[in-house]
Length: 299
Ligand code: C5P
Image (tube, rainbow, N blue to C red):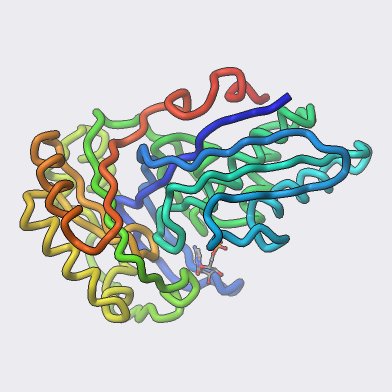
């Protein structure tokens, strides 16, 4: 049997960092939204061996890759099952080092796919637990197209997806690691009266203009300081009538949201003239937009 499915990118419409934890991570509140830029994953059973190939030579295909680590964790979760193995093929479209969660989405896809392919019957809370151990953003990709994330980002409350809107993603082809972005954070700069609740309110009302006006990311100033091109991208999207513009996660991709498809298409064409990687996407409202229905019915 061979399973083929897509895994989406995400943006953070809000990212509020509440404080540093004893374990080195940061407590945060974030509003996650899946968007329609996809990698493709193929999974096929193999005896014992776990193997990954990818069409992008920049993607490591060794044991450091989250897809391999996810497969290993599943093997460990069912020590009684012998001979589990797989060949995984990854076709990459989501840029790496962009804050778009591409690698996390791939790993979540492996957890869902191998649970089926290997007939493991792990429950969704077990997959969420394994996902959280592998990376803070992975549980979101197992959970819902729109969700509030708390704790490290792994404690999730699914949200009703809003009316679809358009999202332009712009990747400047330079990056800063997530760990570096968090380390550079200066808490005296992040204290502000804004919080996630107002964003949630506009999100639930599908009020895109007000949502756009209240986008917020506490990591943005420190990442812009290191990568000034982000400020230029923000300016460009702003001048092209985006309803809101923000750095996604720890960057370095910037996104602009648009209610109007005409404005989005026009802005997309203009951004494509620049030396950046630009994608025109829309918000995802259901897993069935990217995964076969039968894969979604895991217990
Ligand atoms: O969980 P993940 O491996 O994606 O996190 C990468 C790095 O980002 C962590 O090692 C940590 O430095 C930082 N991080 C953090 N607080 C979070 C999430 C990530 O400090 N909530």
